[in-house]
Amino acid sequence: MNKLIEPGSVAVIGASRNVNSAGYGILKSLVTGCVLKSPFCNGFKGPVYAINPNAKKILGKKCYNSVLDVPGGVDLALIAVPAKLVPSVLRECSLKKVGAAAVISAGFAELGTNKGKALQEEITRIAEDAGFLLLGPNCLGVLRPSINLNASFGASTPPSGGIAFITQSGALADSIIDWSLDEMYAFSGIVSLGNMAALGPEHFVEWFATDKKTKVIALYLEGFKDGPALMKAVKKAVRNKKQVFVLKGGRSEAGLKAVSSHTASMAGSYAVFKAAMGQSGAKVVDSLEELFEYAKAVSSQPRAKKNSIAIITNGGGAGVLCADYCQRFGVKLAKLKEGTLKKLDEHMKPTYSRANPLDIIGDALPETYEKAINIVAGEPYVKGVIVIQTLQTMTDGERDARAVIEASKRHPDKPFVTVFMGGKYSKPGKTLLHEAGIPDYNDPKTAAKAMSVLVPK
Image 1 (cartoon, helix red, strand yellow):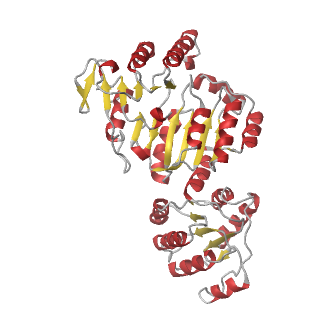
Image 2: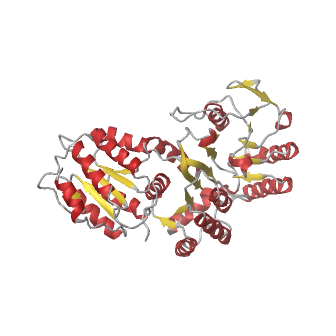
């Protein structure tokens, strides 16, 4: 599996000069890190071979007529040729003894035709007989940001971090990568499963379960072939202290019909799926946003030692809402002790709430935020903090954000979650929080949900 996720060398079979083709996009992603520039784009450092018998050089890479002509070994072959040519290409990969192949090409079982199914069965047999791993077909590819590997036709490369994202939808992966550039979702790996002719989600869950760079595994699934194997892999990940979150597509009658024409999967009962994942230790979520809200929190923050959380806010209404949501999602609010309140009395205005949620009043300056956060977070009985900022005339979002960041550094064993509400004028502070790995949300409900997966139940 290392040859697929952490290859030392990559060949692009079907590399193209057509800038609008997958073969061009894949090669450019490998050479430069992305098609659309982002701050995290860096080219793959290992050998990259372009295979195109009709070109001499593409993007500065010498072109070879066949993978068999490549002078060195090939760990991973990325195949982007018409579907009917894939079997012959895979046979050449077999002769070359490549470690793994990712078939980007579509035109297989997802078509719903006998010809497409037969073609998929043929390429599966070739890979099995040759003994190399086969990802896809009909997939986006694979990304491993920590080694600058963008072996896909995804438009960009996301930040490197602790989230492993395994998805049956390549288009979702591409959009999530774009989303991550704003929200700073940081990934240990992204794998697009495609039609799952040979490799299914269970194989990748098992690999990421022991991956030191991975803290949380996020899955988007429509269907799968081996439920017991997936349950076993999830249990292994949970035993290894990786949290697993799953979003299931194909829950409704309409969704079930759409699944078969998307990746040729069979989707069973959602109730059975949800129960099986729950028994295995995974949390089933309802939306993509929720999937990554949870994943971001878990990948960037420590688990609280005890369910005893404080809310600090300059907006009373936002604090009340957050308290309501905390109760709904099982987050317990710490009762502030008299000693804590006496410390706060020295720095807060007389009208502050003297309770949890700690309302430090709408005109709170950064100095007030800093004192409140440091005093409350410094109390041994407070095991985590939700900081809410509503935007007032005197609000300084950047300094408030720095106060949270510094407190987080002083208390690395306590989770911090923020709600910097607003848009344009809150963005500088939100950006600082994102860059520091503090999960920030625009709604108290979302923050409470994120904290709920960071506290023991």
